[in-house]
Length: 262
Image 1: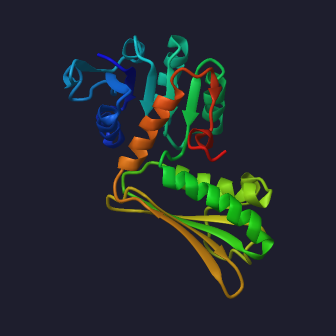
Image 2: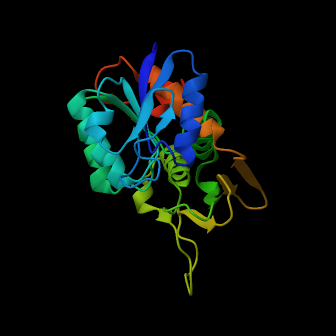
């Protein structure tokens, strides 16, 4: 088996299957290990050529160069701890992490190279750059609002991508998102607070993800929109990131650096 060796965490999930597909398409990477929750019906079976599905992070991390993980916060933190012990680079798109969990990711990144991104799509990250620049250029005369819709099974809300875009707006406006984020409006809310950044969330069907960012002025507005028809571009971007990350020193690398948007 030649090429950089990849562990796919959550290998049989929606994203895990796409990640395996795009690793197979990559000239420099190979699927070398696969991890799923204990009790998964395919545990112990060969799901790739020579790759047996495992539930043991420590065993799965033996003799691999990088892990790619789209799972849930608890599983991501557990596997990343094992990766830090094994010295394995880590790429994760897991969303919904708490503040403490994000702090632990940053601490583990002092031992191994890590990229943690809300979205690995190149176009979504370009959208984030556009959002930051638009917010900076438009100034206080335009109100920022976000709309997002995802499939019915998504566990966290707002989406990680919506929060990423809101953070980009806040950076462009020179403010802290936590002080201006509005994710719920119900009842007698009063006038919109100055500087608010709103996010509205819809869930339903099998939608892979859709985000619309509005800059609403007086008598005019700008809309920046990204719509996903498949999960391919998320997985392809994560695989591209894994190839970029292998061999780098410890650190928490921003996705902007991977795509040349820094």
